[in-house]
Length: 425
Image (tube, rainbow, N blue to C red; front, side):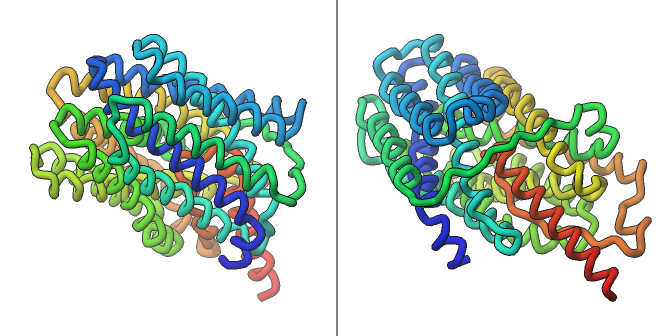
């Protein structure tokens, strides 16, 4: 891990600042929107707009990089991100925020693609798994750390929008001033959705549901907290609990993933999400129970993302893994667009507790579908005596196709090494 940090410290420092800025504005949008009397439906549309921009950006950014290079794309999109953050408090209208969020999501996806290309380029076959682990920890740590900044100033003013703008601007300095060479960029054509479904129905349906779950957590937690009567500090604690859970439980799930049928682990994680959602629903105003619910929900949902990718890889040839990653990212993006809108609809219908109800129902759908699929196809652990699962690689739901493809390279290299060892034996 130290070797990885030495070679990629500039990238990791920049990504940390980037995630602090993104995490702060993500929570602030819900709080400030409530102050401006935006309805739950309007806030859900504003949240979904980010994922619309992110999905389109992840498709277009690679072409921009090929045309003008990483540095120019990184600097240009970063400038737009800083500008959008400053514009939020100047035009406090729902339609304006929807437009700004689309632009923000588009630019952030391009920034991620660029940064993750650099990460993949600085990694080697031997340390790629460690690099992905460090990248995940840096991303989630940045989001958790950002919540402490909510108490620095009044969310009704300008300061809390200026801070993430400054942090995002500063985040580019370590990367752009690094002596690391600019990476070559190659995009992979995504596997078609019908082909992906034939390979792994569980992987495809699960990733679509994960889009629901992650976007609801990331975008609507602050809206829920505001409507539930939580203070700004308490909302920050809830968001921190969600992402701390994801960071802490990612590695235990990864350890288990390499030692058992992944479908049972997906089922267990989904069940944990159902129980966490139920606890949050009945918690009322009990902050302790709310934080426990958030920790468990984040703790099971973040590893689920990587588990579903790893499970899909169990049924893929190495040469198909990169193509599958594009399809998985796309279907997840479609779910992410729909998630906040559906969460907002449920919250409008039954109140703030609808946040937990939506997450609980989404997890229940995941659990039921995985249970059904276990009756339709035997596990590779059962049907192939020589099968050994490739090592689990931690990937967070904020990652773009570049990071997921880096994980796929790790899977493929690991599988190839195991095959060579078996042949030698």
